[in-house]
Length: 282
Ligand SMILES: CC(C)(COP(=O)(O)OP(=O)(O)OC[C@H]1O[C@@H](n2cnc3c(N)ncnc32)[C@H](O)[C@@H]1OP(=O)(O)O)[C@@H](O)C(=O)NCCC(=O)NCCS
Image (cartoon, rainbow, N blue to C red; front, side, top):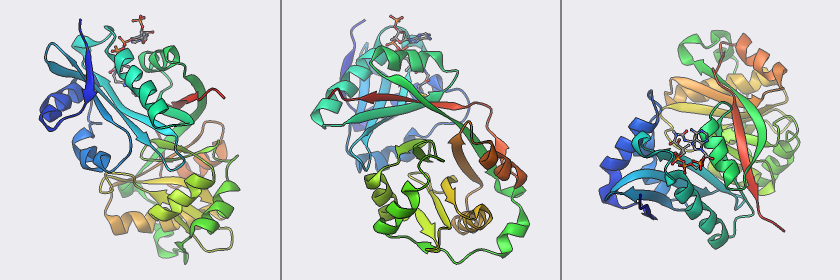
């Protein structure tokens, strides 16, 4: 089968949405919502064409620290196991050189053999694992709404100071919209510029926001200091933005954080996630 790799064009949308719907069972389809946002990012939305039509796709996005995030990789089931995924990875690897990315990462379910095997075949290795927790706002702990702390947006310098101190606790990564950002100075500054870092300047901090689909969910990336205050502030943010759920990911071994969130109505997601990583040879 001949596979042609090229950048996404407007006329591809309907076929790509079909690929997404066929490749991912259930309702986690987001391509249509993120396309405009993707146009504002560095890194190509790539399409794999076979028999004259798009049968696969994948996006590379350069994050605040210059590393690449690989996302929305989908191959239509009728065309799987015929080298389409490999061809898209080929374009990813080319871009890593063109864009000078020092590292590249993606996440997948710990049980997604196809996705991790494909990544490993392209020089990626398994990184840390994360557990996800979700709060349906109907189940939010009402007592936390009434005592929100006086948090403000922290600036870049403050974010660097407060967030790097949480690095070990966060397993080295902070997640917004299932995008796992490596925690380093550039990431902290990027987060502050996005308006995702809140605190009281006394060590109590909440990192929360949405990279896209802000109407769907608020992501808590970290809570530092008094967690009750941080969660209370997050609940109030969620109410203000009208979202129905709050999502959070923490290292699988951080039972304390999970227990705290479960106590306040969060439920553990059915599957844990693993980050797959590639780093440039020195
Ligand atoms: C993961 C996915 C993109 C792979 O695409 P693909 O076009 O089938 O992959 P390829 O044919 O290029 O496979 C290349 C290699 O990956 C590995 N691989 C792919 N599918 C596999 C499977 N089901 N089981 C085990 N290994 C697999 C193999 O090493 C394979 O080489 P081989 O066929 O010579 O053994 C595709 O299965 C898919 O779209 N899945 C649903 C969406 C998804 O899980 N996306 C990943 C992000 S979470």
